[in-house]
Length: 217
Image (cartoon, rainbow, N blue to C red; front, top):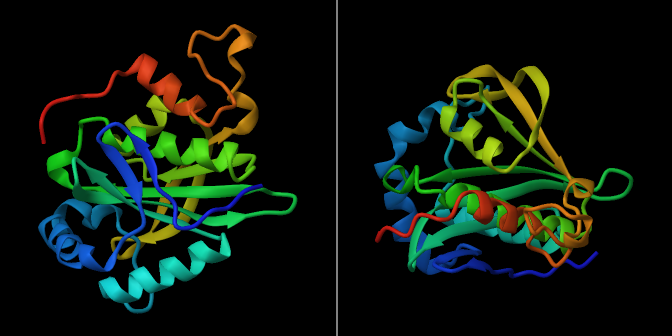
């Protein structure tokens, strides 16, 4: 297992990196502009309602957890502009070696294949560099966009968790989707997706099946 922080992951114009102090204005503007877009999917506190911590608090907490190896909080940057965030947390070691992946994206950037590529980059890192065995994504059944993400990444459904997460002011059911390290097989196994253990197995398969959208941002 190798855990490095700060961490930057790249695929052409897509960069995943830690949030920085200078991102505050862009981050706050994104959250304000996308408040209605993100509301149905944002987790909430069952006692205190919708609580979005200040950027500085969010960043400090994320940095602390990232250095401890229990979280990977990364900004989604496209062509130099912050577009969203993707986070693996909690990251568990020992006999479980698993992580849960969550993400959000600016509405103007949705539908361009950015989130699947970002998720593939993170999953490949968790498997190839951090030695994890399983990555999980939970999705509300109503979230068609996220269902498309897990479909593109070939995550397998494991069923419904009833009242699993407090979202948008109430306890909501979530579907569970999973990928394990064994599903990313080496290229000599004859799979057409060109997967390998060089850290790009999920991403290579995604790019083969769904070439990225290259429209200007």
